[in-house]
Image (cartoon, rainbow, N blue to C red; front, side, top):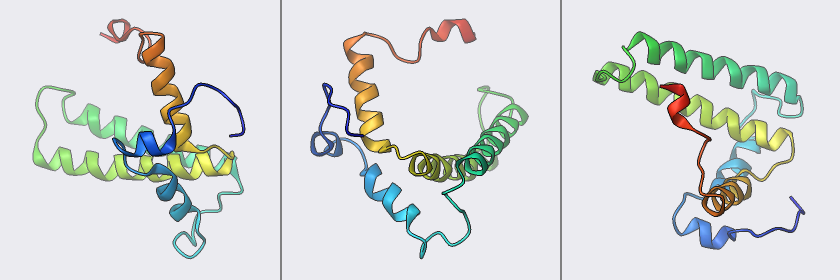
Length: 123
């Protein structure tokens, strides 16, 4: 987090994005999070991957993008909530400021005129 690079500042980024740093800090607080030991990044990573797998399973079960029912959207919301929480835990466990990482990556993608590689290769 001490790397000096062309960065979108946290204050600049927070004008358009939620304050991910506060979210990450709150989740790392033992009073709010007595159940997950973020000092064990291997376990956090495994749990994160499991939650991504659960989301993919629900997504595939719903018929992909052919139109989602409200029940499917509710399941997606639950799984994506778990993924977001675990992503913040994972970032904390490996000492990454997730907000700055997102802002840095967005800036790099804009400068390089790319975003997530070539999406057509997934179609």
